Image (cartoon, rainbow, N blue to C red; front, side, top):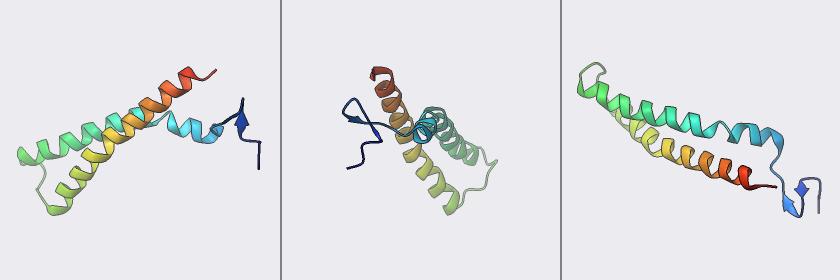
Length: 82
């Protein structure tokens, strides 16, 4: 077994992955705001409503909060780590 990635008996998060996981909260907020803005702009007839745009907005509405929650959980885990 490779013990290079273990700290204090627990698996350690590699530093490169740790840098990327810290960006999930702001990116999740941005994606959620964009996903709400797209339908709003289509209702105001600024953007033309297409199937692609509607499906894209729906996917962003699903992915944005998930990214935010994963980033929030990771940040609270890092704050608790010794």
